[in-house]
Every structure is written in C-alpha cells, then in structure tokens.
Image (cartoon, rainbow, N blue to C red; front, side, top):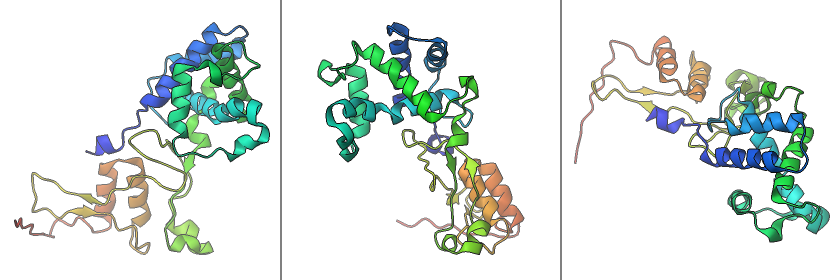
Length: 246
C-alpha cells in the first residue's frame, strides 16, 4: 500500500516529454541545446525524481505553454484564463495539434514545440549542461505545523524545514510546496495484537515528533517506526487488544 500511495510515475508528463522531443527532431530550426533537451526527454521513464533533469525540462515547457498559445490572440488578457480543466485541455492540444490553435507566427506545430522548449529553458534559467538542471532543487517542500507554524519562533521548531522534493500534482503521490502524504496509522496484520503505530506530530513537545513528520514525507515506513520506537510509541511491553465487531 505504501508503494502505491507514494508512486511518482507520471504518464501525462512522459507523453508530453515524448511529444516535445518529436517536435524538436522535426522542427525547421534547432541548435545543440535543443537537441540535448530532446535526447533527455525521449529517454525519460516518467518517474518524477528529485534529481530528474527530464522532469524539469517538461515542467519548464508546460509553464510557458499557455502564454505562448494564447498571447498572440488575446494579448495580455491571456492572464484571465483560469480553468480547472486547463491541464486536460493542454494535453489534448499537444496530442491532437489542431490547426486552429497553432499561433500564426509558426509554420508547424513542430516549430512551436521547439520554441516552447527554448522559451522554457530561457525563462527557467537552465544551465549550459541540462543534465545538471535538477527538479527537486527548484521545487522543495516545507510542511509547517497548522497551529504553531503561525508563530514566528515555533515556526522553525515545529516544521520539517525546506527539503528537496518530488513536488507534482500529476502523480498518485500528491505533493506541493506546503503539503504532502503523511503516515497516520500502520498495523502489522500478521500480529494484530502489536500496538498500532501512529503519528503524533500534532504535539511538537513529543521527542522525535519532527523526525516522524520528516519520515512520513519521505515515505519510508522503517524510518517512521524507528522514530516512534525512540519516542516510546512502540514499546515492547505495550499491548493493545483489537476486537472485531459486526
């Protein structure tokens, strides 16, 4: 279950990466930088990892997609475009390439996609070697306590701090700058009499509370259980009786 909940494979981003690479290969004007980007994109397995340069290439192109698509027709009014289904609309436009949506200054969708990657690299501040452009460094996660995070001194003490992360909303594992998956309850079904392990991050005074929160962020159950054992949450002498009732 933990493996499923923390799955970081993004089929959507992998498809977009393949389409961007194809567009660069068939564009009328490219350069060595774009060809390196195409080589990285076409070999991406779709896993959103912290050190993934391929995911960052795809993300940078997606960031400039709607401005480049809408601004030629709407001018600065493109900023008014806010739609919950915009991600789906963008995917359909990229996959189907309707002629009516192609900006007039481009001769083909391949030229548009090549320029899309070029503008994404420029606005994202990509280094000369795109392999060093790592995703997790630009998209960290910093989870704060919902109550104590409002207080200046307690904010740094009760939070997890800034960590490199696989911040994305296009995978099963949903992560943003200020939120991510957490482990609330773990039970060993081969020994149900063993005390269940629960997270107690709500009380920052408990020793290892922040370790528990950080372990929940990484998705490693072993680290979480070890933290609970150090804080006395999984004592060997503690017994809990679990009764099943209809």
